[in-house]
Image (cartoon, rainbow, N blue to C red; front, top):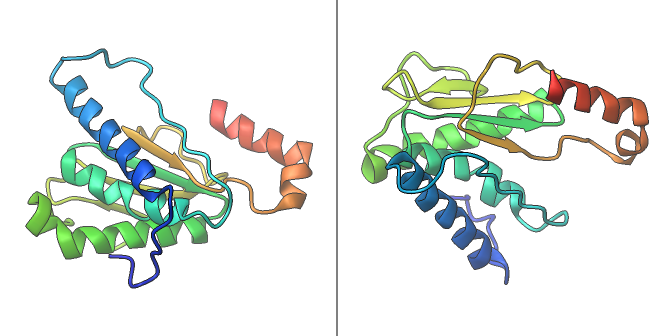
Length: 168
């Protein structure tokens, strides 16, 4: 699934259990068993701890397998970086979707940064943080590395631009 790049770490099972618990809770919300308001998860891990591989490269395709009518938005510091995550998830759906979840990519979806499932409802949009996603709703939103480097992190102006994009 990760082309031999994944290395299991002590926290891997914990992160996987948190993700599965979130999927299970979403199913309970959809069934009306628990409230649907204010259901958020924030996963914050240091660099090089497989958060991008575990969460951003894999969770959207797994999530869409469980909720094929939902929309996923993934945001990263650049369009190029985000597109890579969209491509990884699209490839996972192509490779495993039909067998594991009975889902497929729409034949009309050729782009890696915006694609739909064959039901023409569920799908994924991947964009850079300042690329404008206003008006594009999401059932699952992943923000992975919205700031590129220390210079941007230290820039009050850049942080302000990101915040303004978020609240607009």
